[in-house]
Image 1 (cartoon, rainbow, N blue to C red):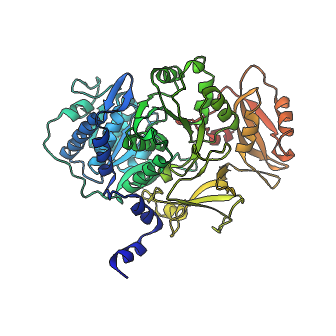
Image 2 (image 1 turned 180 degrees about the horizontal axis):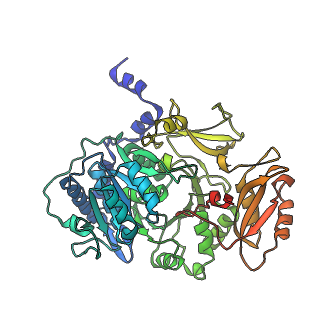
Image 3 (image 1 turned 135 degrees about the horizontal axis):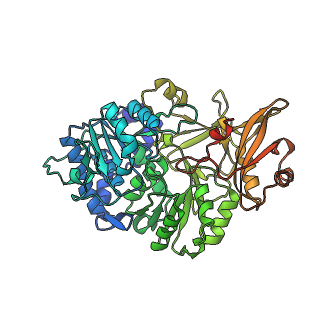
Amino acid sequence: MDKKKMLETELDYAQKMLQKINDKGDRNLVEAFDRAISEHRERTAFSCLGQDLSFLELDRNSKAFAAFLHASDIKPGSRIALQMPNILAYPIVVWGALRAGVVIVNTNPMYTERELRHQFTDAGIDALVLFEGCLAVTAPVAEELGVRLVVVAGALKPDSSQVLPQGCPDRYVALGTALATPNTATIETTNVSMESLAVLQYTGGTTGPSKGAMLTHGNLFASAWQTTSALDENERSDGIVIAPMPLYHIYGFTWNVISCCMNGVHSVLIPDPRNLDSLVQAMRAYRFTGFAGVNTLFAGLMRHPQFDEIDFSYLRGSIAGGAALVTSVAEEWERRTGSKLFEGYAMSETSSSLTCNTPDANQIGTVGKPLPAMEVKVIDSEGADLGIEKVGELAVRGPQVLKGYWNRPAETAAAVDSDGWFRTGDVAVIQADGFLRIVDRIKDMILVSGFNVYPNEIEDVLTAHPDVFECAAVGVADERTGEAIKVFVVPSGAARDAEVLRDYCRRQLTAYKVPKHIAFVDALPKSAVGKVLRRELRTP
């Protein structure tokens, strides 16, 4: 056996797939980024709050930030936390950190001191870049933990005129100052490989303290390649996408900061997607060709009084992810915008790439087919492959799947087996036609008199009723049936009749799936990206 074939046999599935798709032989993600810069340097890369950042400016500023990190003795492999909304500073800092071989720790700007303390301590951060609006909460934690370098970013494009807010510790540095600091150091990424750690993406902590999914340069490279394969050919070079999904979340991070950027796509950053007025204003200001969001955002937008005044004639399609897409929402979006809504599915642990519907293969009610260079299967509790049209836990493997959980070898071993298969914790069905249908989360399943009930099915039925804007189903203790179904309903109008909704369910669901309890609420608890937090609804 020759040396090349011997090497190939030693590679696992993910490594073989990465080697196959890396046809240019890039040593790391930055080399691929540099090629994109040379091709698109005069185009706008990002816009935010009326300001533009070209690819050329992104290149220059990211190199300056990499040099600043080097001069500040933040060494390759060190962790740098990023705590910012969607502002122009974000992609600058990301690509600067990647150039310097520094590991990014994406951090929610709305975190409390307790949450920040856990994440910063767990990641062992050496540096922090935060939005000035986060100082009141975050600065005390940074001081308590002795974070060596703290950089403060403003909402606008960073430049040398930026000044620190009053009350900042003297050692803090304004991002504009950091980028303008003279430095002759040339930062080389020759010691950074596709196997090098790029990001610690902390999970939501739905079953315990959040843990860091270790994503490598190769993971992000593969994710960008996979999502590119689903793009329309024109979208790869002249697209404009509205970007309301938080960049600190894996969905927005991989899609806008990595994939769109590497394809020369212009991203319009939305700092606060909860402010629908500003989001609609941005959508009216650009001839956007793409849009990405979650079900609750699509539903909320369509209730805005100016929604139908938006020009959707350039829109080639919208991506729905992050949470289950309700069929009625998808159908209404397509009817009112004249464009398709493509549902996809991914996780932090898979670098935001798993499956997606595409213009050539779209089936509402599914999350599409697996993206290229990956494999999927449905397994039972013992790990046996159940085959098609069977309900079981979804397992996946591919070049975008995490390296492991940061400092958690036992949890890594439980989630990823020796052959590279990652257990997602989601209940799914692989249809005979190849489309994947997510049934629900294993932990969200409700057991009524021994029968499995999946909340997504109940919610999909109820949301189609004209009196229901949105809802969430959970299991509650019941002496007779073990668990009973309770649905929290946000009404679409003044009507609040539980029996009317229960009768509606009886006509479409078998008896044990009909909610025993219905509670009307003004709003559902949600995460930063719009996922309904069922765990909070279960709390007495």
